[in-house]
Image (cartoon, rainbow, N blue to C red):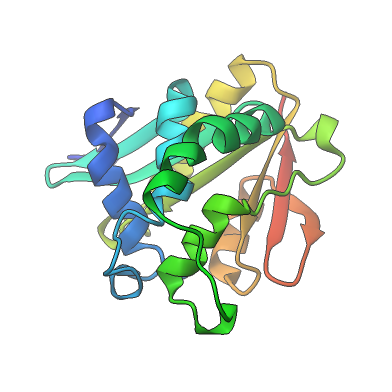
Amino acid sequence: MLPAGFQIRPCRPEDEAAAYQVCLTTGDGGRDGTHLYRDDPRALGNIFVGPYIHLEPELAFVLEDPQGVCGYVLGALDSRQFYRAFAEEWLAPLRRQHPEPTGDPAAWTPTQKLYHQYYHPDVVCPEPYAEYPSHLHIDLMPRAQGRGLGRELMQVLLSALTARRTPGVHLGMAPENARAERFYKKLGFYELLRTSDTLYLARRLP
């Protein structure tokens, strides 16, 4: 049961700008990242939101309250297939708009680091891939947090993935975000892979 005034529904094309805003305002390790990307507020969403809405719309859901969209959960059924389309279809026009940054990477702005990813996508499909081929992203604005809404969003996507008969799903998160790790583990996720900057969690599905 959702709190009064909230609803979860499939994402529509006209939700894109609002979903990008959710991504931006949670884009600094869960905190507002607006100050990091003032030169291009869409740069972050171009990696973590836009391709999912356009390439896998049937696995994109938003959380809405009277103020508008305040969260989303986005999924990809077959990660390898998704990342191929991401590179070949989604990133190509972005590369025409944004040149690849040059010079010392240590001097790049946060936006330039994202532009670098347009040319060199940071793609990881953790093994055993056959057991966890799907993946997901979820973000909620502060006004939607701490109310059980994240769990509800996750259940909607997990049900959609289960209906499509995927054996399992994974996600990547910042390893220092202990609160998020506890949240996912309460939903049955467990550690699959840990790199220097990302913790990958996974869960089998029925």
